[in-house]
Image (cartoon, rainbow, N blue to C red; front, side):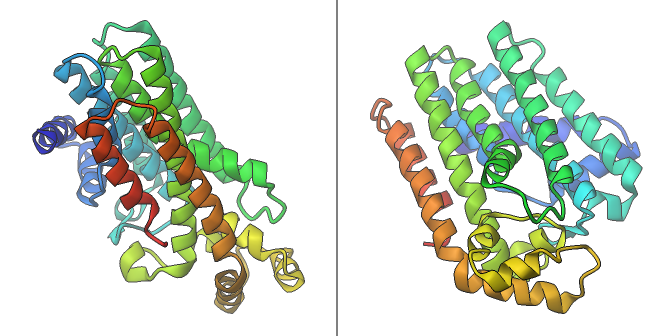
Amino acid sequence: MLKGQIKEVEAIINDIISRDESTINAASAHILSSGGKRIRPYFVLLSGSFGQEREAELIKTAAALEIVHMASLVHDDYIDNSSKRRGKDAIHEVWDGQTAVRTGHYLLASALQLISDIDNPDFHHYFSDIILEVCYGEFDQLSDRYDAAVSLTDYLRRINRKTAVLIEASCKLGAMSTGSDAKTVFHLARFGHFMGMSYQIIDDILDYTSSEAVLGKPVGSDIRNGHVTLPLMYAASDADVRKMLSLLSPDQPDDYFNQLIERVNIRGIEPAAAISRKYAEKAAYHLLKLPDTDDRRQMEKLLVKMTKRIF
């Protein structure tokens, strides 16, 4: 059943980006064709199983949140001047920056239109809050670039807005759209938040430890784009790393970044992984507060799969 519902979500997204032959639709199709795990739709659908049977609203919610996610990727790539997205050229590389900005705006507007007929004011208030948080996250990412003194609090707020807020929303809105009780909505939302935090920290670790073939972008893209993440923060307990970090700028040569990446791999990976594990444990705790169903067990499997990529 879940695979069939995911196909329905894909069909809705394809319909939205195929409404005409404009550049914006072509650019939207381009970001969709870059792939993705469809994590958010999966969690919308699974979370919705704890409420009443309202499949039409559930499918729309899943598609809308995936479209918001797509919009955030387009904007993030342009803000970071990242040339690749999952191994494919970014929209601003294929077209230009203006097209990337307009495409992101179009996708956000399409997501809002898609769920406009859902008759639940609380649902819409929360959905609009989520879009604001995603936008704030983009501002955070821009303002923090090449800031060697970014604090742990700033980092955690940034990854919450960048990743966790949409995964939390997937779980919460899935439950809300099928009329789940308040207790169920609370535990699903907490599960999504903690899992999203764990997941993003792992992504930040893999940016240092994986390969370009797996990442679809150069190793160390975060620090090359001026983003100080948790592994580097822990590596900065070393005085030499702190000295290097004080010189962080976009004008540094490749050798500077390569040395920094090497030192992070020595000192920063395991402490950051330990924090990711703590978030994963908190996510698992909230899952156990939900009824023992096949869908809960599927969520447990997804939690393990998503948060065990480096362990």
